[in-house]
Length: 313
Image (cartoon, rainbow, N blue to C red; front, side, top):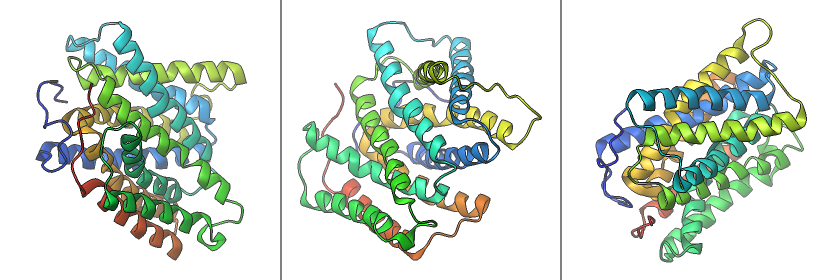
C-alpha cells in the first residue's frame, strides 16, 4: 500500500485523475459492493449484526495499526487526529454498517447498493449548502434525476420483491447520506501530514468503540461461537475487506477530492447488483433497471459539469 501523503493528484481536480487513482476507484467500488454481500452472508447464517460490525471493525483496525507501527507511521494523539477518528468512525463505518447489516436480511443486496448511487448528488448538495461549489443548472438537474430514480423504486409496489418493503428501502438510504457527509469532512479535516493507513486504522478502532457501547447497552454478544460456518467466514472476510476499503477512502479523497471520489458509486452500484444476482439469485425488476438509468444520468450531470472549488481547509 503506497502511503506517501505527498504523492497525490491535484486535490479537487475534476478532469484528470491519474491511472493509479482510477484503479483505486475501481477497487474501492468493488470493495463497497462486496461489503453488502458479506453482510447478507453473515445475516443469513445467523450472525448478530452488532457483534458482526464490532469484530470487523476491531480486527481490521488492529491489523492496520500494526502495519502502521511496523512502518513507523503511527499517528499522534491530538485533537485533530482524535476528531477525524471519531467523526469518520461514526459516519463511515459504525452507523452505516450497523444499519446496512440490520437491513441485510430484510432488503435484497441489489436494492441496498442502489442507494449508493445517490452519494454523489448528496455530496454536491452538501457542497452547495456549505458554499464549496457554485450552482449549475445541469448539476441541479442531475440531483432531480437521482431523486426520480429513487421514487421509481419506492412508489410502485411492483418494483419491490415484497409488499411493504418500501419503508426498509427508504431507511437504507441513510447510509448514503452518512457517506456523503463523511467525504466532505474528510476533505476538510484530514491532517495532511498523516498517511491514509493510520487514519483508516483509527477510523476502524473508533467504530469498534462505538459499537462496543451499543453492544453493552443491548446485551448482544457474539464471539465466533458455534461450528465455523459461512457467517464466521463472512466476518473474517469483512475485516480484510474493510482494511482495503477504508484505506482507499482516505487515499482517493486525498488524491482527487470528494467529487471524483463520489464517482466510485458508479462501480459500487453495478458491482453490488452483479453480486446480488451472482450470490443470491436476485432478479431486479424493470423498475429497478429504469431507476439505474435515471440515477446514472443524474450522476453524469453532477460529476462532469463545471469545476469544483477546493474543499480543504
